[in-house]
Length: 250
Image 1 (cartoon, rainbow, N blue to C red):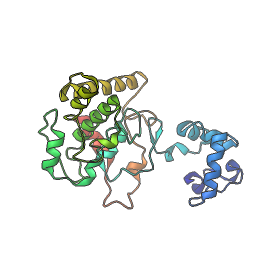
Image 2: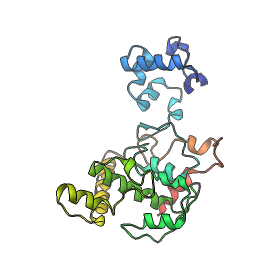
Image 3: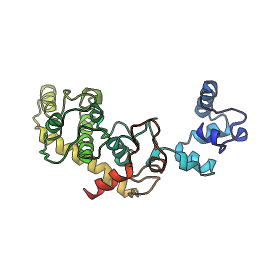
Image 4: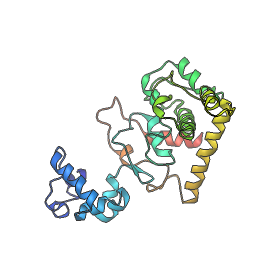
C-alpha cells in the first residue's frame, strides 16, 4: 500500500485495485490474489518481500522493512534500542520470538533487572530501567536469546517465560520441569550452555550461507529507514545503528 501511495505501484500493476491505506476491501482482495496467484501483483507478492521488491523495481527494496528476508511484525523499534538490536541480529531475521527483551518496556527497578540478568551466569555490567537507553541492552538481548532458545528446546510457549513477566519461569525453574517429566537431571547452567550452543550453530549456518554484518539482504543490519526517518510518535528519535555498533565492539 505504501508503494501504491508513493506511485511506485500504479493501477497498471494492481489491475485497477486502489491499494490505499484504509481501503479494507482492497486489502482483502489483495490477500486472495496473493493466495491464489490470480494477478500479476498477487503472483509477485506470493514469492516474498525481497523477490517481490526486485520484480517491482523502482527502488521498492528501499521501502521493505525486513531483516535476512523476514518481514517485520508491523512494529517500530526505533525508540527501543534493545528491540532494534534483537531484530537486527536474530538468526531468523526480523523475528519477535528471538531475543526480544519485552520486559525492558516495564521500567523494572535495576535491582530486579540485576536479579534476572545475573542468573544463571553472573553479570556485573551496566543495566538500565529505561527502555530508550542503550545501557546494558546488548547483554539483555544476549540473555534473552539464550532464554528463548532454551524454551524452544523444551517445547514451552514463550508466553510462560520472562518474555512477558519478571516473575515467570526461567533457567532456575526449568531443571525441575525436565526432571519431573523425564527423570533427567540438569542444572540451570547446563541449560544455559546448551541454548548457547544451539544459537551458535544457527549463527554458523548463517555464516556459511554468506551472512555479513552490513548486507541489507541477509546481514545483521536494519533497513535504512530506521536511521533516516524520524520517529514521529515516540518520545525521541534513537539511532539503532549506534547500538549495533556498540554491540559489535562489545
